Image (cartoon, rainbow, N blue to C red; front, side, top):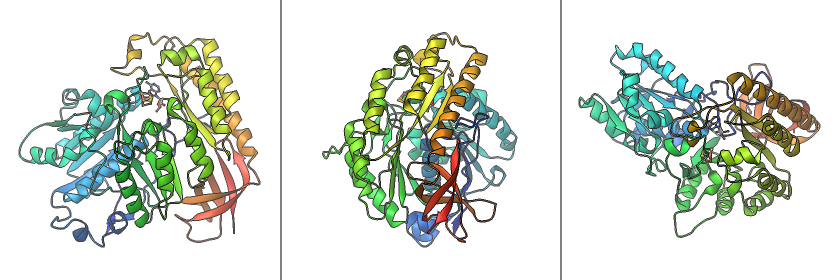
Length: 497
Ligand code: 5AD
Ligand code: SF4
């Protein structure tokens, strides 16, 4: 049986690694984009030969059909995979279009105003479908943030559920079937999201795995501590059990996820450190690549660098958001480090036994950001020479401390700063990528171009590379590629054997 994927990525990964659209300036930013879904056989996901073996006693589709659309970061993508798995295991079938579904779920993102607006405009589009007797539900960060207010703003919605309550979804849906008009799940401090019976994974080679939920940092601009609640780490033995299962199912790359993934604190007596966890995951037979995102600079310790230097399976890429190059702005953002302290972390990463790619997130136009402070961010780019960057205009968010600061930089000025920043980064990337021409990389092939004999994949350092090969089937395999050309955003190359 083929599970037809209907998960689409709305906003590309704000946290570092997902495919994103290119901006006018050619630097990764936050345009809307759709992920390329794959068909994954149920057998691959569960290790069972058929639906009835995977879910004994459950008839596929007996409860109806669902359509699930996802906006936001990789954590949201992965949450959607878990929600889809849960619904499949309870007798729902996944539909390819909202028209074909009896239940329409929208997994939302509220990190920036634009993302949240997009949710409400999409809900407006769903309104027409309510007449057809469909259940419409809002999941994720907007659900958590707006809570029952969503019912006022979009009365055709009947289910609102934050990420910590997904395990209760079947119960909530049963309540709707029993005649309840509206149901909510808005707890924020449970860790029930970690353990799911089956996760309906979207990528056949790379599996996401959340190891830490929520966030205990309190960056003054950020909604995450409100929408995802306090930090909770998953037990190390449970993580390793799932990695072993994934390897048995044929996954060779795992990506450990968390808003502050390196703040991981094993709740078991083992007290496995994050670096030890990376090494233990890399040690699982069948695993070839271990990625992790997003790292917080304050918790980035020498043992993590040492682990990457020592174990080649741990990918040579660190996403280390700086947000600003000005210590005064960093203090106002409550980022817990100064420019100098951040640069010390960079120096530590640069001193590793092998080169490690470094990427970052930057916000321009934070309240009160002076021109000279913005210039400090530009000089930081010069100094660090990032391999890639996600950049955003500051967006005031509900509940956040910075909401009370006057949003003093005009949209026009924010746009000007963003464009200057992106132009600088594009130059840096163009120069860095050009230096890679002639080098050879191992690439995990993840896409086939419409153009004949053209493929795409990622290096361990997470550089995208488009390459030519005469082979007819390369998807999911690891191949050697020689770089023959470079653009600011990626590499081109040829398959070498
Ligand atoms: N405005 C603009 N960008 C933001 N980010 C988080 N909150 C905001 C906000 N209010 C960015 C940060 C973070 C990334 C996930 O999104 O750069 O690292
Ligand atoms: Fe938000 Fe800061 Fe936590 Fe990242 S570390 S999720 S920016 S509060």
